[in-house]
Length: 248
Length: 213
Image (cartoon, rainbow over all chains, first blue to last red; front, side, top):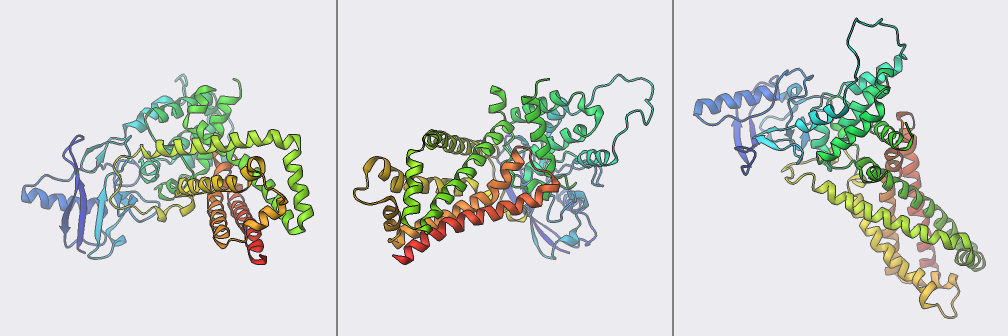
């Protein structure tokens, strides 16, 4: 398969970027999107040109490192996959593909397609954890947890923090991410202990990072590679309301 | 509490609570207007009640406050949201993942606001301040709809209001946290049904009196 790629090139955080056109040829349909970029980069190296920087790590859809806004959608046109799980068979032979970095002022471009998503790390550090005194392993069934609660907590915990929600949202809101992180603990008794501080601190940090506000368009849920449900945002709102209204 | 009201979620909750309040107002307003179909006496009586009842007089000010809060908060949130992304995408496909109504709340909202100003001038200001001479309230309303242009503007505004509500209704439940997967579909379809009821209900009145004139 042959493709025309229009890729965002930007020297560094302060440079002015622009879209540059590249051609790739003889790409097999089973090539992943990132492998296709590897092929392009190999061509650029052979020509002595600067390679295109893009984030990647596990390449099996669990680390949340790969990003990219491909043809107007986060992680490309296929639903429930990250860019590393997107294969070139999802495109037509000869198609022009636009590749842009995730856009949000809270995710500044570092170089080309690489963006700084450390804002998510700071939100996590503000409350996305449970505190306990490490010691001997506790008895496995000391705290009974209903199966459905465990399952819902796990569904929320599937969030890989890739930032597709922010990139997709017309408001650059991080609420799906924050709601998943709050929800995964909200379901579990171990998480309830610090629930009030967690939601207050994480929302406060989210606001300080300059993310936009959720207007419930639901775009994040559709584009999330892990299918994190919008119901988590409703839960985040409930948790936040409760933390503010109910005295401790 | 201060921090709550200025936080992102706190502001969403203010939008949704004022939204709920305005939804209730629309139900009351439509109910009163439907009395136009019962003839002059019924509408004039309803209108007289609204103009003189003590509770309604107090509610007027609360309603105005609700409108102002919803409008100011909505515009301010929109400006904040826009400033969160300085560089736009070259290619973006929002229609792949969200509805037209949800993405254009600010535009439908502003157009409904412009209509509201026109509407207040047409009826509220005339009744309260200018005076309508020998006309009854019923005649004031029915005479206005003799103009096709006037009717057209009103019907377009009702459709825009319907579009605004089709997202606003379910969004208000989501923002206050009163949305669960179990009720999601129910809230969505109730919202759409309510939007259609409001748009069709008000439009029917405008069109009916336009045609019989």
